[in-house]
Length: 199
Image 1 (cartoon, rainbow, N blue to C red):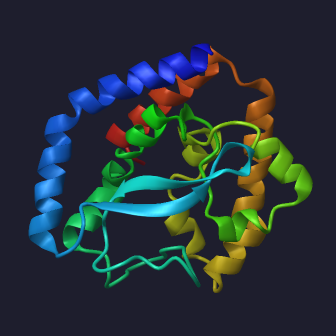
Image 2 (image 1 turned 90 degrees about the horizontal axis):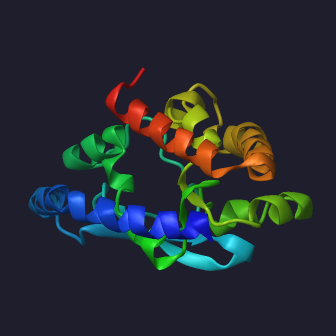
């Protein structure tokens, strides 16, 4: 209950403080390319319930929901504004709306698309889907440069499924077993630090 109350009020405060940023980003997106300000995609939440995640749109047209989902290396569909949003992680800020709505938490496992959740084992699903997915978490911090990591492989999609995703699931399962309010606060501040002081 404490976690949910903190998530709700902290996210409301974040949305209020960041309102000028949201307005500026929305204008930049609309001026840079035709299409909506927000990108909505189905993700799997707590207890396997699907929901639509909010992100600032970073690509031209409709992002694909079938076939390869990962964006690796230079992609001609990513707009100049979108590239800045991705590098700065500002494109993720609208997920504060998901936190207010109760779809997500500030800290937890990152929500996956159905395509990848279907590949999880029953034990992985039971462990990771027991909590709300988060804006950040230990696996997110470790793999903050995921695109760069996957770009080193000849088959990034396979590398994600067999290497990165498996390690993320293990990290998330361990986090869930020992998470506390204070450890969540530490992860929030660690994430904020990485946003301002990137490697």
